[in-house]
Image (cartoon, rainbow, N blue to C red; front, side):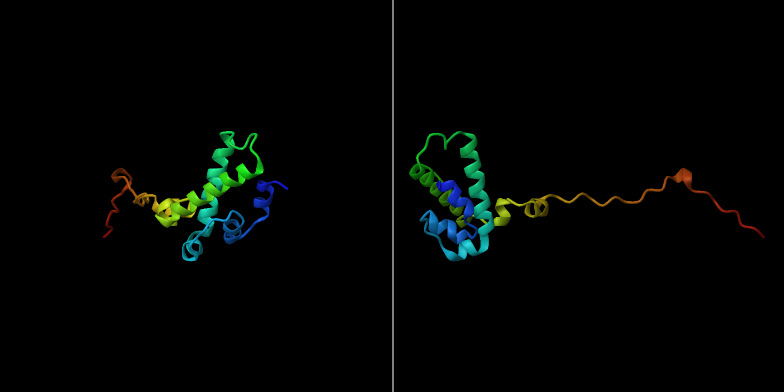
Length: 117
């Protein structure tokens, strides 16, 4: 089984760190586990589209995956999930909110009611 196949079978962030032998601070992973894994996935996808995996041995692929996990982890040691905005909910929370539309009634549409005696 290849390293990428083995990675695909993992689920918990701690499993990725253990499998790739990357040291980590549990408090950082506790807060940003999904963000770290998503960022690692972005890095892996970028490497894959650049052809970085073509012709590599499993040990080299493992080293590249380890490097991407370390990089993703460091992103969240120095920043926060909200600052990084990887997920839609964080992106939308940071977007400026449009000003609420005010109702508009054109003056020409107003009619004066006549007083009856």
